[in-house]
Image (cartoon, rainbow, N blue to C red; front, side):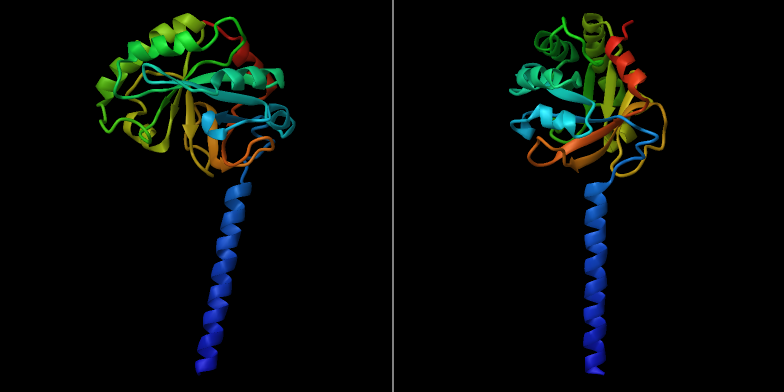
Length: 236
């Protein structure tokens, strides 16, 4: 009986190990149907360190959304180099702003407009709304909407394009449908979003791409090359 119990225990451990290994492999190799979503992109900041953008471009990456600013005065130290080198490698590039709940939206707009170049082809500006890494306060939808509108008005006027709003799952649950209506960039890890009114879908936050050491966020575009070209060229 004891031997049988030991054997069953060992078998259980083996099965559990296989399940864990399979889950780990699935998590790190997951990618949406490329027939349905043919264009893959990444979003990066200084946290990715030195990036070899030519290797990134050669590893099935078509576009990059690069962190430019945060709040009213912070500038991502890698933004200028990442923007320049990603464009030189042939990627479609855009910039995003991390929206803090601690500063007026108008101040944040001035920061973004001052840092992001106006004389280069860019994907629509993105405003990133999430709770992680943000101020502890949680504005009401009405409060956030007022400050977000104060950000979006000047930014969209400066760049001549409708901005895209990035929402994490938590932020979407709290604010979607209650703040400024804009095209969406949704974060839904390993699962296709349950809504279809999005431009970008961030499907992985621990992806791997050649040319970047460590993890990177992975995204797909809803549409093909024509859609990407339209985003680069479109204006009001």
